[in-house]
Length: 293
Image 1 (cartoon, rainbow, N blue to C red):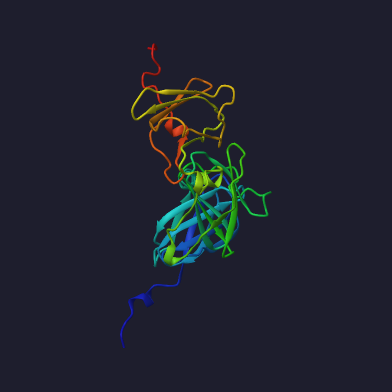
Image 2 (cartoon, rainbow, N blue to C red):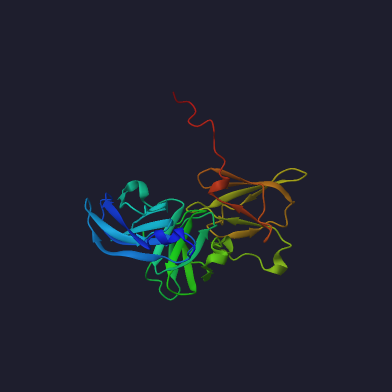
């Protein structure tokens, strides 16, 4: 008879959790490495400065998520429980989820959404249930990821940006072992009315500035002198676009807002022949604060 050393590893083990978050932990979920769904291991109330013993799978965890009554998550990654001793986890501010990645738990199946727009996404709503913001108070900044856990096989959401504009419907891709790192992205075309196929021979300038309007556009052509476009009578607002194809082909473009700040753009969103002015193209004055000691 062959001996299988894995038989010595128990299916479950105990985890001693100390709550140092200052919040009430209401549930705990584990994601076992190699699995594509969450397992709930605690459902109750673990008050601040108290402790409890959780029963968890005795396997390497790619993620343990602690959810609190106010909607805050705390996350521990790459955790391997002991097979003989009871492990202790102290959960505090260091484990709080913020910046870069956010778990939104409503089930066990994983859906991943990345904000690929230059503007913060302040709201994500299931289509048909626009009264509940899945993000809560946490905006999804540019390049940040929201991981939805739901019991459905398909999720259709709508996003709302910081200016209050709604996106088109976005169908999220369910992650499983074969496509675990596949992401659904919120692109600018989710919000903006970009050129159709027969309009792509033109060139456009799109504003993705929030709370700022573009008053002047200076086109610096590949050859020749710069051309100034005065928009003061009709400034370019958030998600608004103008056709600049009647002007020389740009080497780069400089935009100016109502406060005199300048933004330089030297690349084009080639899928739609669109130049995009956003906060990332702001010309920073490295001499600031000049004249101060």
